[in-house]
Every structure is written in C-alpha cells, then in structure tokens.
Image 1 (cartoon, helix red, strand yellow):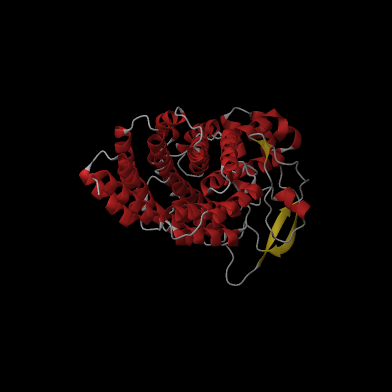
Image 2 (image 1 turned 135 degrees about the vertical axis):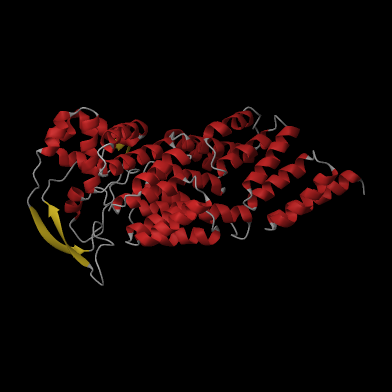
Length: 464
C-alpha cells in the first residue's frame, strides 16, 4: 500500500471515529499523521474539529490558524477560524477578516459551505446587534438547509433578541429535534445551546419552572456552558432563591472572570437586594469584561442607580454622567426616552413614562428603579419639566387586594405564606409598548390572579 493510500485510509478512519462520538481517538490519529507531515491540511482540519468537539477552543484555533498558513485563501480554513473565534467569545471585528476571505471564495454548488457562511454572517450581525440583518441571514440559512441545527439556533436567537418569543421557541424546538444523538460532541453542544436559549426565552416570559428545567437540561449536557448557568441563576432569583442564584453566578465568574452577562446579573441582583457591593460589581462589567454595546448600556444604567443610592454625595454627579453614557449605548432605552422627551411624561403623566421604561425587553427595572431612572434622566438631560411633573405626582389612592404571591414580595415572605396584601395603585390602562427597533414588544404579565386589565395597568412587563 502506497504512502498516500495509507494516509487516506487513516484520514477516513479518523473521520469515522469522530462521527461515532470518539473525537479523542480521532485526534490521536490526526496527530500521528501530522508527525509525518506537519503541513497536511486534512489532518490540521481534523485536529481543529476534534479539539472543538472536546471544548478545547484555544487548541482548535491554533490548528485552524496553522491550516490558514498552509491554505491562506481557502474558504473552509478561514470559515473554521471565524466560527471558532465566535465560540471563543471574541468580537465581530476580530473575526471579520477571516469571514471576508471566506465570502470572497466561490460558494456555488457547495450548499454546506453556503449554509455555514450564512450562519457565520448571522452570528456576526448578532454580535454587532444588527438584528434585522441577523434575522435575514439566519432565515436564509434555514431555507438552504432546514435540517441543520445551527441555522435554527441562530434564527431562534435573532427572534429572542427582538422579543418574538413564540417564533423563537418554535425555531429552538426544531433545532433540538435536528441535533441528533446527544452522545456526539457537536450535536451535544448544539443541543445544550438550544436548551439554554429556550430557558432564556421562558425566563423572559416569566415561565420560571420551564426556564429552570431547560437550563438544567443544558447544564446536564454541557456543565461548562455559561449561558445555561446564568439563565438558571436568573430564574432562581425570580423564584425567590437569590442566595442560590448568586452562588451560581459566583461559580461562573470563578471560571470566567470576564463573563459580562454573569457579572451584570450579579450586580443587578445585588442592586435589587440593596447590597452596597452592587456598584463595585457593575464597575467590573465596564472594566474587566467583553460586553456588547447594549449590555454595556444596561450595566451603566444599573451602575448609575447604584451610585445614586450610595451615601457618598461625591457619587451624585458621577451617577448623572454614567446614566447619560448608558443612554448613549442602549438602543431601546434611546427609543423610549425619545418618546418620553416628546411629551409622554408631560402629556400622559409620569406613570406612563415609568411603565414605558419598565417595558424595555433587555433592561430589567422594577417600579421603584424605573421611577428613579426617569428622574435621573430628566436631571441629567436638563428636562426640568419632566422633573417637575415627576415631583408633583402625589401617591394615588390605593386599594389592598389579597392575591397569590406577587413578584415584589417573592423571597421576602416567611414560612408557608402564599399571599400578600399588595397595594395596587388606581391607574388608567396604558397604551401598548412602543415599537422597539421596529417591532412590537409583547407584554409579559405576572400570573398572580389579578384581572388582565389591572395587570396591564400596573405590571406592563411583570418583572419583579
């Protein structure tokens, strides 16, 4: 048997072992081939794929970059590095040169490559928060190959980002079905990712038992999947288990101190619990993590709220500066603030403005925090008329209604107490939420037994 024939047989055997769920065995074969020829492109690609299956992203990237050294203009090599950079959590700017080289290659006749390029383009758009482009490319990827889970996961992610929750759940359910046996490395990872995103959708919809169940399913598949653990912590917090939630987030940050989502959620939980450590935790999001633009905006808003609550008067002016910076970064907050500036707070009243702030899908605010934020924005942006309108509002008459445990008292009642005397202000029903990035944001209601119209009036999002 000739040398080339023997190499081909070993490559085929390594491919079979990887497909059967033994990437470690396949990796040994590929490494043996590289000892004979360090520039064997097929072996380098195999090493990158196996290391990716095993979760060794840095080693996979190293092999991918070696492959580019052998084939600098190869679409497969550049696309592989693009995908690995996104998996490593790198920003879109770092992946862009490799993606551009891949897109410059001829894709005709290669549906698999075309599908992967559409997915990579959608992922880059998500990283840049260009949700319209992300949705378009993810939809096209599903059209090209509806049986591939990655395109369905990206479609579900894009739907989640624009608060289209039911379509997101359908796409993610289809992704789970398309993943195949969970024993295979890549299928296992994709299934876990789909479960984690499903949990995130349920958390947004205030379906906490489902969120906890899906997050745990993702953790069982991939214990190191940080998104699943962060969403699990968020659902625990909303279920009144703040201590367990903070422990979960602490565990994520011990393994990955630069995880922006985990650090921001920890800071927000501390803010809700009036923990003075909140400001320091949120500062860490700005200085020690890689965060998307809107995530940085959210972190700055939470930090401004935390700073204003500190007794040190020197933080007061800084809080105004930070809240302006948060406004400049957070697109949905900008949209709502434009409506408030345009007359919402003065014409319909401050309560309508507060409810609009609470309705922002990617900025968690309870009623007190939304009121505080409205006052801070009015002061920082020089809108004395809004400040006067807010200060002139007297507490409305209220009625006491006994109902199942409401979100503002979860975790605060003791023993087997299941109801609370929640004073519900008599306010008129607000208009529907504004279009956020061109799409209607669906309300999320707290299931606490109150009439739906009353919930629309007082709980526009039902968040805490």
